[in-house]
Length: 232
Picture 1 (tube, helix red, strand yellow):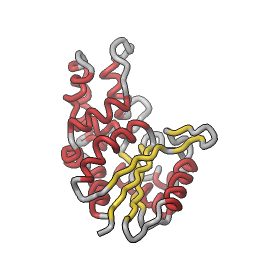
Picture 2 (spheres, rainbow, N blue to C red):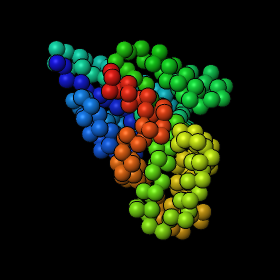
Picture 3 (tube, helix red, strand yellow):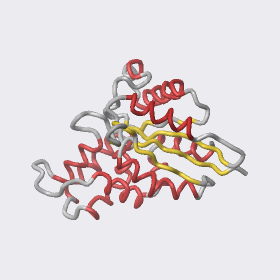
Picture 4 (cartoon, helix red, strand yellow):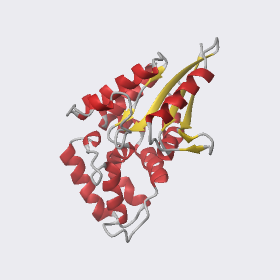
């Protein structure tokens, strides 16, 4: 039987930490041999990585992966992405058409379909996170005060936000209301007089506490991605 290797092109360090410390061990328990996180390249000459100001950054990295990771008699390679829908660059495949779709789940699937068509690789599984990585933290808001003691009261608003939205993936992508913006206010306070929010450390620590199974239970689009990775 061939070994199965999944390569995840990550938008930033938060996603990279999640893939390495949370997603990798989970998928390995489900028959995946290896899971590798790759930070998106933003400036090849300076070896700068992380962030996606333009789709071209992702396109170049995905093309390189396809060329250098060829299947053979012993291994099979799968490629995927972990990009935020929030602040997605407007040159992303299908962006203009998708922006006219009201339902966020339908919209993000349209973007993924356009990305898959642009990459044109049967080993590629596109994934765009609704609405950004921090939505996953809303699956376990009670874990935040463990890292930031004293923010319990302010985190009550996050619980209200989640109840109003219905599930974490439906919390919107406004410049002041996106999941990360709400969490930063809860942790740092309106006047930023409390903690400094550590995005990468909080992301991997809290999602590890929550566990992939609970993330899947609360986030339908995320669950679909995990199912495809396992079944691929």
